[in-house]
Length: 273
Image (cartoon, rainbow, N blue to C red; front, side):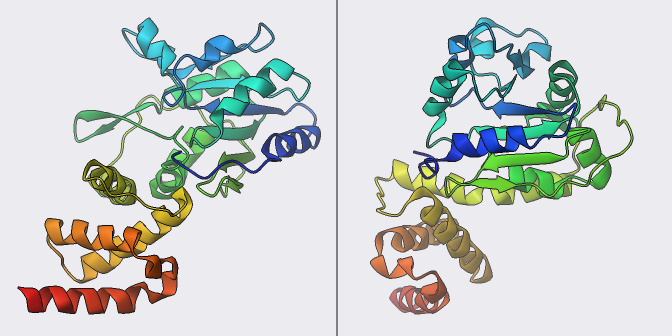
């Protein structure tokens, strides 16, 4: 699993949110199809899923299978309820409360699937809820408005398996869909830094490192470990060794003890050299 198992009442919380919507609003689920390819095909005819990648040039059937998609939430649709159960443990579900239609929201979000950075184009992984908070943080107020439109609520499944919420500034005017989603180098660099703990875990697993920590605990430990490694100016190899120690030593379950542990570990490493 990439994040902690979902809270057992996560779909019930969606139903409660749905029932509290103001008149004219809808609750739309944004699902990252990359984690369960082709999942949208399992939805029944009552679920008119909008595939965001269909707006991309040359979209193939294989591309459609891994496309993020949006679908209106209906608490009475048992087919949707069963399909959503397959999302458990994956960072792939957001719930957006909005006044836009499904088609309008689809056009808005599709415009952000690919972003330009210094003339290069990148897959903008906002449907991945591990990336979403960092992405939202680096966007300018104007970009956020273009991104969310008339949305007045955006919840996403957090690393701890609980619903988390973006802090939205409610827009009272109609914000047009962006014609060019673009980030500057500073924004891009911040996003690369935000993904470093997950990238480190991938590198460590390739070396055979295992951990008894939950995904959310593991991410918290690696985030702090990498902060300490940056302060200590560790080389890439030393950084990886230090992170491996943090995940395999039971003492690291005490998050507050990491700075002292790092000082001791780094001192031993300096003596060894």
